[in-house]
Image (tube, rainbow, N blue to C red; front, side, top):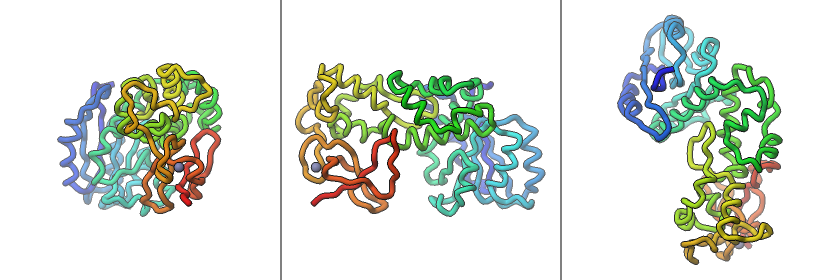
Length: 329
Ligand SMILES: [Zn+2]
């Protein structure tokens, strides 16, 4: 394996090659650099392009344009992807779209991709691309035989292992050698485990769980470094909720019967102005975050359970926090 990640970009728009410099210049702690090969396929014969590509070694990541202007019969990124997959079954393939219009792409076609990113958001997603390349490399080096060995890759806290075992979908507990396994695992980790609050909390959820607003959380964040997620497919700052609680109880010396959102105020450096308040009644100790209203652009705000109700658009799930919406009389 080389010291850099090999990225391959397949596109018919040569202006997108302009990303090469910034992509190759990008540096992230703990991750290698990327080297990008840009393949302009405009007006080329798609069959020839594919057979040429397949002669090369499998890259660490492919960026695939959605609609490709070639001479051949294969003109869409997902058809290219399907064919490339027969040869290259390890590397993540990320679809690139012209605009933020993921909804234009059929769901079953979206499934072909590890992810879909619009060109305008691409720079903000460099870290995710590098993480995908690194995590898939690491997965390829491991031989997974049991769900336990999988949980080790998540670096999950011991007290969550049983619950995680149960929360893992059945399809990820066997067939570890199936070629689609790494992609299915990546989707579950990124979209469910990291995408839904429960085992892991993002900044806003972590703050609320400790009874703090985001400014308050910034004050004490260093004390909770040990709760940060450091497993595979780490694409942003996330904290294990159970470790947040252990650190909180230890730091405040409180009894386990206390509620975490009532304890954050006892942390060193925290004053009244750092405490989280309910968006509906303005009182202290909101237990959860919820949406302000049912609109698509609604903000997430701290809410008491009594000042909110379950959001009708979200299914409840045993292992994840309920997504709620404000209900203020
Ligand atoms: Zn309230």
